Image 1 (cartoon, protein in one colour):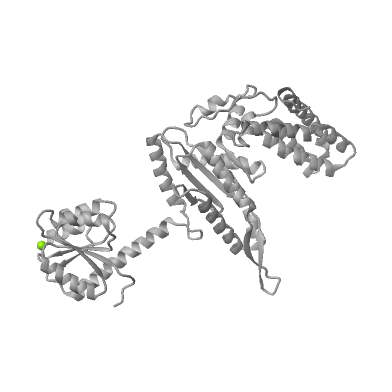
Image 2 (image 1 turned 60 degrees about the horizontal axis):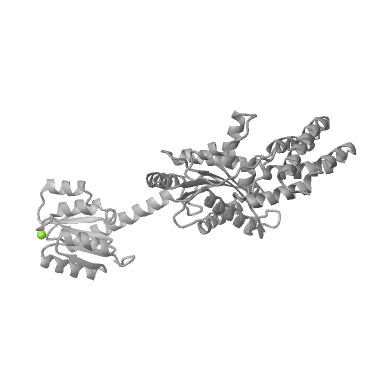
Length: 458
Ligand SMILES: [Mg+2]
């Protein structure tokens, strides 16, 4: 018989003659052997070398065979190694005790070489099959990363560790934008290729100890231990950018072209929602639900962006107290990580939303507001003119652009009414234009006035 590899066997027996006999027979069969005289030595030895199978004598001075077995099975490093007990006795109670403690098999001495080797092969094959099944049970077959079950298990473990150590932890959800179109336009093989490239990108961009997993069809998640919200935003933004600029090579099944396979490159983008775990007992399930709400917001507001849970909290808060201004202190009170957000008062702008879109960089946000003002403060007049002249292409273009930038600077009321106008244009509801325009006009004046008052925009 030829072995798949050189398996290493640890022989634990106080009798030198048995050790020598086993060494001779097992080496001849292609195994590598190390020997220990007793249980204590064996436990030390298991910590220093990799062993595939243990042959353990039942009767030894010092730690008995059963005591040694119990200790082997109790320590993580050796718990999975198969053990075959060797004994001159055929005491049934002893055999049962050994099997109950986790021995894989029981062989009586003097052993028959052929029988012992057959039992060793079986024990090793069983261990390998078990390891393989465990791997398959935990791994997503397509992408090779953690599947949903394994992601949940590992993340819950990380969450409880973080909670005990008082460390912050972030969970993010990822959804590939327009993934259905990849499948529809290029076929499922192309879709699978995109999923593989996406997973590989996650493995490359995130750290070795971050937990990544595929949690749905085109949905992925990452659990970032010992990470604050700011750094999680940066990491997710880095990944978003990585995907955006990546050209994914796919093979399309083009049935109209003599069944020839065509290579082509496509670009994909990703929407990301993340949540900083609040203090207290939580499960990955609950955190993913919150991250999912931020993700939904990202999807609803143009995709290809990172949104964190503060936006969702801000919206909830606003829904609760319609007229009162948002207090970011309340939102951050429950979190481990306090950021230095200086409240500024721009009328019509949710500062918290706007600044989180630029990862908390206030100077950058101010620059963006100035640019927003310069580029768009005449949009009201332009829209009015276009509506009057029935230039609906221009109305559409102006409303669509304004909708996007209003959202990114956090002008949420302006965003809502611009969105309504954008929809009305798309559905050709001309009867709604005038009333929507007058709301839009007052919102745009309000926002621009607010910026004028707070910043030097001349
Ligand atoms: Mg003995």
